[in-house]
Image (tube, rainbow, N blue to C red; front, side):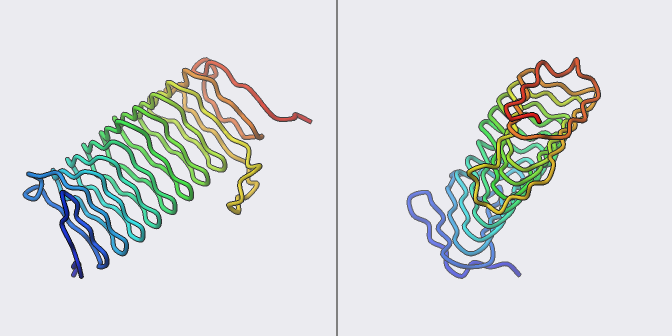
Length: 221
């Protein structure tokens, strides 16, 4: 059974110093509160509202219909249900996995973890990973997609309005492998910006007319 060992409410903040989980449901949402926890995850219930959510060691679960501002965790994944609205989501060690119809008013970012976006998702900012795959299914991304060491897949009428950028691994001391990155873009999806390649990749683009330009910024021997 999940429980909070110590929880304090200070000027609109829920501060959980230790425990297993912090839960907020719709009936608790008359006052939108920020949630900060060190040990333990955070669960925002169905149709609930919350402000900024921060966790050091614990995952964050946002259930369907919820409305949340910034989501930030260090060691833990972020799971998001259907028809959720958030400002942004960032995790260091963990995946971001979303259900259908996610509305992101800012961007999504991971260091060591993938990002999976499903049908009718709209991201007003950028989608960024260092060491994780990006999978966008029937998704609109208004700014850029960036990665250092992750595969990228655009499928089912996905649209990237900005650039797709594969950064060089030089300068990153995160134990990145030198695996070959694969970019997959199906015949129904398109990139309106430029694909910038700062390292060799495998391109699997079903219809080149759906990609405006590809620039290679590395020595081609």
